Image (cartoon, rainbow, N blue to C red):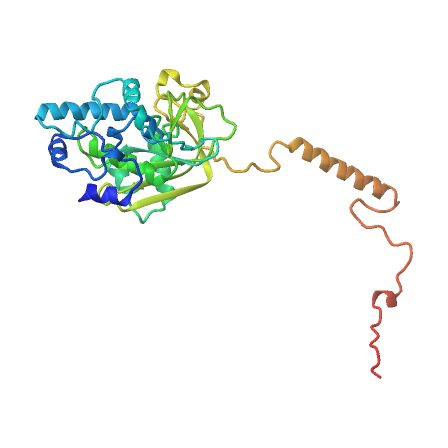
Amino acid sequence: MMMDALYAAYPTAWINHGMRSADGTRWWDRYDEPAPQRNVHNRPPAEWAHYFDPLVVAAQKARNAYRNRYDGVHGHRDVVYRYGEPMEAEAREHAHAFHEPVDALGPDPQADDLYGGIRVVLPPGLHRIVHDSSRGAAERAGLLLDHLGHGSLPPGAAWNVTEHGALEDLAHEEVFGTAARQPATHLTFRIRPLPGRQLPPHDVKATWVRFVDSPGIEVELAGMSWRSPRRAWLTHTAVFDPPVDAAIAPKYPADASPQYRARYSEIGDLLPGQTARRTGNPSPFAGREAEILALADRVRQGVGRRAADRPGTALGQQAPADHPVHPQHQHPQQHTPRIR
């Protein structure tokens, strides 16, 4: 019912069923797929590669093929095209059936807000504080960031165009993860656009971008959100205004850029002497101290010269008027026209 509902709810979308477990393999063998032509495992990569990573899909298909053989089931092999063949051969084989290749415009890191996330198991005391709704969200987000390190934003994350997409990635990781189950907090970061930055190589898809072998990328962290492990419908959100300086961690510590090493340790903590910084609009007076002092000095000199031109006038006092003002000029009479 869930799979039928998925196909019905998204009648034109590509669908990737991913990698199946042992129970999933036996279930899949009995399942009658409503629209197998929209299953990416059944179509050439040129049709759907703007939405999914072909190498990941190929690995999923290979794993599913192994499970089919291991469990002795058919698994709709006649629909899933050519297990194990090179993609180029598959493309040539199915060239006659190609649809118009998808022309999806993915996110631009230099123009779009991006959302990435990690699953983190927090110490018990910090876990209680972070999920305590009676405390301010900004305070709890600050504690989280200090615990993780300002330079520890996830280097391998797929940075999505929506927060929901980032949280979906984390949920998918948890479902298919093989590590021992512990109550992990799903945490997302919102980074602002990176205009004018020299970005490392990155892989762009329709709704996400992934930085390849990141050397440590300085970003403006504009907000954080996290979900309760026990109550996934409860999301805590903190907005940083102005944003906080942070960094996407290097993929490999040895490849960290000099700028990253100058500010962060290998585990992403701020180095001694480095402090968290806000990236709001700078003060209009910052860096202009000498200019302001020179202007004030010119003003004082001008006042002094004008006072010297009027003998007997102390600096800062108004010189007496040359002619007395007649009282009638101070309070002119108001004449009301007579009604005739």
